[in-house]
Image (cartoon, rainbow, N blue to C red; front, top):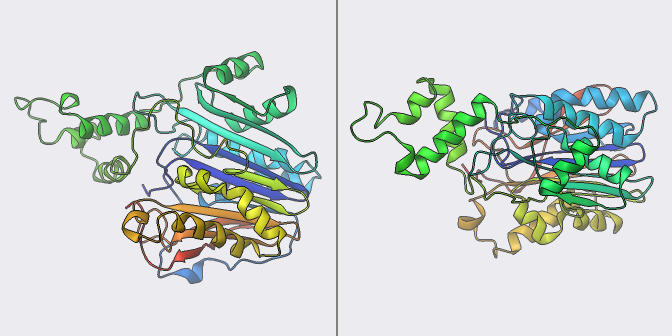
Length: 359
């Protein structure tokens, strides 16, 4: 398995404008990575075409679903949420939804937000347990309440009242990774020295499957791993995890959400595009503010990764990554685009043209 984001998925579509952002806690298997030395396999960014959908790279296989809705004249937000739902329903994608990796107590908690450009409305949920499709839940908050954000158990109860099904979101794969993290974190979660599995406990958890062991080792090594219960990232924060202005465009982020919250990244990108910057340059401006918060100290900056994505009202799109690589050193940072003909990966513009991030 290949590694994906610490905690989330982002998607935006353009006819009018809509953004959907869904988040979790950490980890993801990315089935569509690309080698840093093989950029020719990634299509260049192409401005000015509608309808258009962009997403983080793990949404590549799901973009057809949203494009079908747009081509039939459907609403942009319906298209965006339909794509996110595909990812949320996939137990092999541990970025969001069913199979998401849990917090330190072994509970899967989900965040999501939506914005609808034509009507200037928004909805958001955070730290939701036992509800799989939280992007649709955020849309329900927008449509059926006088609020923008509902969190924690209140969001779960609201979901149940609105007919959402409660379920155990922890798959066997995610449970094993959580147990491996616990074993790394505490001697008390490992067999004692009298056990034949004393030195090979993590290997035993994964039945000595080297690929699974390697994936688990990468995930549980990330800072922060095993987040504190009820932590909310930037995904549910309007103006950070997602932001849309129908007169300008839409923007959002994946990666270390705490860094995005501190610069209100989504809003920053919208305002940069309002001033005339291209989507890519606007994303780089936001990335520069993240770097500036650490005075450009690469020793600190290399402990995390973050991406920004943007699309303007003309249909131009772009994305920036803090580092040249994705979540593995050999994978080029990329995002997914569907312009009505096909879904493809497009390279992100790196802020630092070198390998870095939370390896």
